[in-house]
Length: 202
Image (cartoon, rainbow, N blue to C red):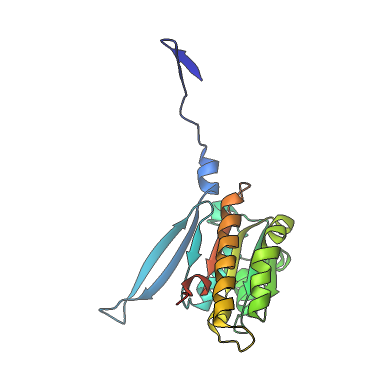
């Protein structure tokens, strides 16, 4: 803070290179060109603090690579998260692909086995309970900068729950997610969804 002509002026805040690296997480994925099916196009997605990203039907390699890169050092284009929290909402998640990528591509199998936290839910009630009641305390416990949610559980019909109740729970979950994302000031809280945010209450 400096004084010029009896007016207080604030100097621009200094941002170090380390801080700039810390506040970004880059994801790269490829997809088929609409005009030429034999050609692949690449897309680069840059996430910053508290971003929420949703990918519909992502490739297993993309999901698993993102999870492993969450614990890589920043100098290797990772997030350098103490842990990565993975919430699985179906039985289709490829756990072995994570270990293969961690071992063969990044050579950090031991670190991946220690730092990737996996939890499974089997019902919509368990999913809602996690987001509304467990999300905040689990993130604080594991200090996760990256949360990955996979599967399409919320799109499945369930005779045990009415459409009205399902829509209400959905809105409660989204509010809990956004609240936790905005309130996390210790670092990032990134959420990766394969399906939840694409659900619409009709």
